[in-house]
Image 1 (cartoon, helix red, strand yellow):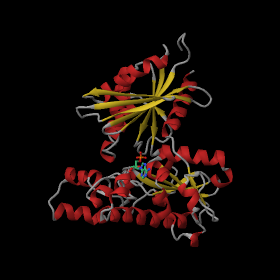
Image 2 (cartoon, protein in one colour; image 1 turned 60 degrees about the horizontal axis):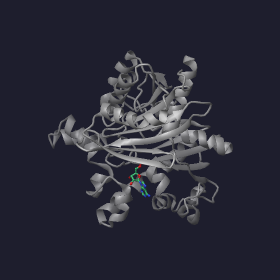
Image 3 (cartoon, protein in one colour; image 1 turned 180 degrees about the horizontal axis):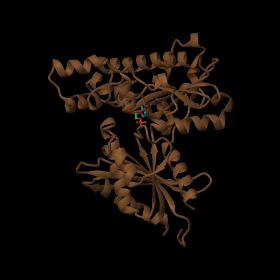
Length: 392
Ligand code: AMP
């Protein structure tokens, strides 16, 4: 603790070319003071945006890597910190493997284990860990806390945790981990806070953004996720393929002569909405495009989600609420309408006016339909806050 007041909490959420951050004041419920991001890391013209109350700052910072991006962020935050230190840094870590579920202090031993998981989440894990190293260099006295996207699902029942491979692969960690756990954590807690009767029931949360997945919850616990061993499985995404017959991978190897690097690039970076539309990974662009290919990409996205709503309803033994979050889930009235169309047989009927008006509750059937904006940063800040209290 410094004379200026208790140390602040910084949260970092690192992607391949972006570093999102928030600063929180610690407390029983951490208070967000500022947030922003550096985009185009690795390119020649990275840009930092910072929002602090109503004040927005945009700043070109030239060529940047994760460490220099963090330094640039810190330079902008200095006036806001008013002499206070950063006491704890919370990191979104996409993959915690079999060993890490609850938030944890990132010791060298934990970091070494997390690095072995990089091949399972190549779009995220290496960048998450790069941000941790940068934060250790910038704040050597701060607690570095990892929050794992896989953690929320680690209580999956066995049949939803395994693949039908020889058992030794399960023992080696070839499992259905599930991801987007920080988002599901936030949304399920909001549901419990605002509508406890629903949170105790059978709920599907659809996190639909650039990455997309769904989670089936019973009494607030994940019992199934559309994502599996890697963040490739399940729903089609911006650039990721979603569910795929493994025979396709064999065919790409045997008939197209492709190797692991090429296939990884194809499935992670060139598929999904981008691959199908031949135009863009971005839903807004596709909605505006009006080309037959863009329309078909949206058709496939909608079809696969509807299929999974049916499958998850079956494993839940019925449905009490469907909750949308993520950039598409929160903002696209058109996609929400198409997902709910003709679902009256399930007791799920959209209120078209409420949907268009972006109301928090958008159904008027037996199954409640909700939009709950997600906040992964707050989940991370709460975990750091708890770790700081334990540390005294
Ligand atoms: P996220 O990864 O959660 O930030 O979500 C990004 C996705 O949300 C992109 O595909 C965006 O095009 C999409 N998105 C954001 N706003 C809208 C909107 N108003 N309408 C349709 N899609 C949107």
